[in-house]
Image (cartoon, rainbow, N blue to C red; front, side, top):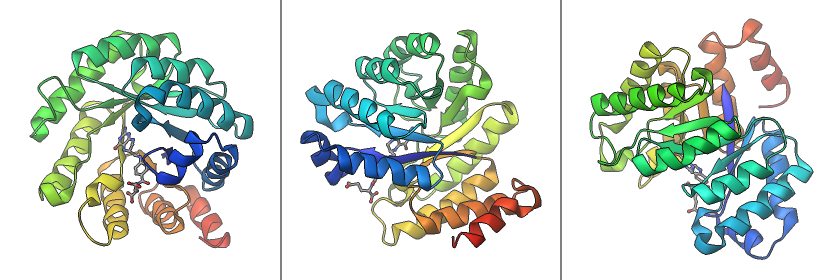
Length: 263
Ligand code: THG
């Protein structure tokens, strides 16, 4: 299981203010908290700064790495900002978040993945838009995997994101994601699947319980990476428990460790 900490994102008001005023301490505090929560990667996203996104990314990547040694997940649709993030990354192999099957995005981001030898999140979206059916999602995933591996990317470095949308806009959507995950793992057992969890619950009350339940359901279907809040102890408890129940925790060692640490 791979956990990417989502909290360094300027859509969060406090993070936005900290980046705007270049206040290191809040960012470093969030970075440390995510490390302590067990994150393997830290997502860095300042996309809503628009023109100031390049400078924001440079500042964030530099200060985070002075404090913590985790590799970073550079979260931007802008290839120039992606390159700034990747060129400054110095702990482990960074992750590109993200490439997609849209022609322009694919052709500009692929060279960065190859040059910086990164892992990559690939979104199931193409020029015709977000796919409407499971078959379309699987077709796009197949194409992404074929084109990435043809360029020399290892299957084990690819994380397919089915793009989770709010259940409130389409009540079949949870089921579609589960079928997509099963389809990808059947056809490509070495490739990983990933998603952000909070979209599923958008527009509905008690979002936490929807996010938690959806994590357990997607894990059961084979999802093996998440972009989430690693400081959410309840979520972390469900994650450890679900892993133990799915045979991903030898001797229940991590479950027991989590129990003893109060999770
Ligand atoms: N897939 C991929 N990358 C992603 C996403 C995804 N990156 C961005 C996003 N989705 C995941 N990251 C976050 C970061 C912070 C929050 C949610 C997702 C967050 N949200 C608050 C909430 O949901 O209550 C409110 C934010 C606000 O203030 O509006 O904190 O799906 N590949």
